[in-house]
Amino acid sequence: MFKFENLVVTPEVQDAVARAKANPTSAPIAVIITPQDGSTPEDVKKVVMSAGVAEKDIESAEHFVFVRLLPSQIEQISGDKSLNKIWLDREMGIQLQSSLKTIQALNCMDAEGKVETCEDVAWAVLDDGIDASHPALKACDVENFDLTGEGPVGGHGTHIAGIIGGFCPEDNFYGVAPKCKILNFKVIGQKVKSTSVVIKAMEMIRQMNDKAGRLIIQGANMSLGSLDEENFKVFSPGHSPVCDEANRLVASGVCVAVAAGNFGAQYYMTSQQQGMPVFAPATIADPGAAELPVTVGSTHKELPNRYGVSVFSSKGPTGDGRLKPDLIAPGEKILSCIPPGIIPGQIYAELSGTSQATAHVSGVMAFLLHRYPDLKGHPNTVKDILVRSSRDIFRDRTYQGQGVVSLSSALQLTSDRAG
Image (cartoon, rainbow, N blue to C red):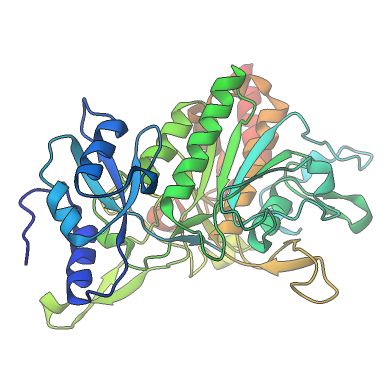
């Protein structure tokens, strides 16, 4: 078997190469290639083409190259000095109104019951699509960007968008940041669900802001993550391509909320230890392991102090020892929008997951930017405010982060800072 003499080829890709060699009929391996410092994606494309890949079969972004390669082609290019890393293009998937009280968001209604709305804030939802015709989402002025070619509508993304910005007084349904403008970046479909598509969407957001010369998209919600249940085995956790791009998006001025994942704290088997089970507390999924975004775990929608952190919520620290999640939010049996037809006769349903928790945090950030526009373009400050104002429920920090997000406390802290 070919032995890779350096770390250009990540362990995940090495494993994929070994599996492909054992099964010659397997499909080419989807990879993401990062250029070495001083090299560009165009340099990498030339290297890939030298291995016999047609230019039309190679895609590139500002910082990455996406391509499917045979094991022999990976071996051929692995020694080229213009390559930094060859990563596996891993499969991504979705991470599944009493909760408004839990995050102390009811102050969005005045004494007369009038709802304070957030039309001046725009939030990108990177998910499986949104039903813009839903009664509670019509006011969100949803704009579609379908990167899958499978149509803009999705069930999970509709649920997430409803939590963030839904508004339907007739149904007595309100999101955390009612009427927030939603940009529907569909990155997950039935056939398309790769990391590279998520990266492309984040790059699109940066480019749209750059082209406009201002932040026309102030925030992004990523209730998604790697489907690999052994995230603690990932090479360089927090520094994978999707994490790098998430950090880059935050650095550009965009607030980003990311799901911690639904992998709980797990046991797994290792052959090195003769099949003995090993406890793995560090199950934060990429891109949740990225440093700069707000990584969100889940708690009970009404009684977080009693029930603590949801059993399914991924636990920290990250594989390289950083404290994650940053905070937690309601993620159990959350009522929100669904497209008609999923459940006969219903357009609202309860779903659970760190996805729903993350949407609450996106809503809190959006409302904060609405109330204090000077915070737009300062995601690190927004994150600091949310973390410092979170409500401690006295669980392990690697489970709860700094505690339950609180909109009222965040607003008060921001007011105190401004004063």
